[in-house]
Image 1 (cartoon, rainbow, N blue to C red):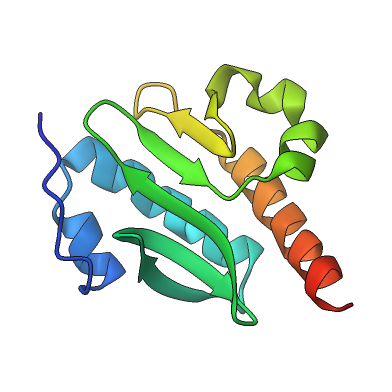
Image 2 (image 1 turned 90 degrees about the vertical axis):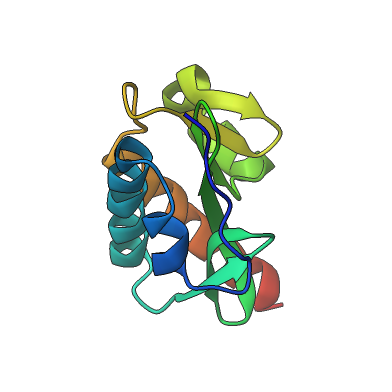
Length: 126
């Protein structure tokens, strides 16, 4: 099933509404999980996909593609820190790939987001 790409200037809700139900449901859970892990983060559309920004700095992006969903923003430190848990999901540098049939555990998403919050805080407080 093809993924319709919403207009990048639209909202996260519009982005999710345009997805097939399995992807929409999965990314809705991912969205709630990220919100819980970074309650002060702002939701934005960036590079045509949903993202969260904290204190003016990008935290994570997520999106749906034809045959998978992805979470972006896990830099080198995050990949190293969670290498064992991420191994089945790695799809490239900083890309975590998952599907509705094999979702990324929400607990792991929370850990990644919290690590990104700490990483951004450390990097940009200097």
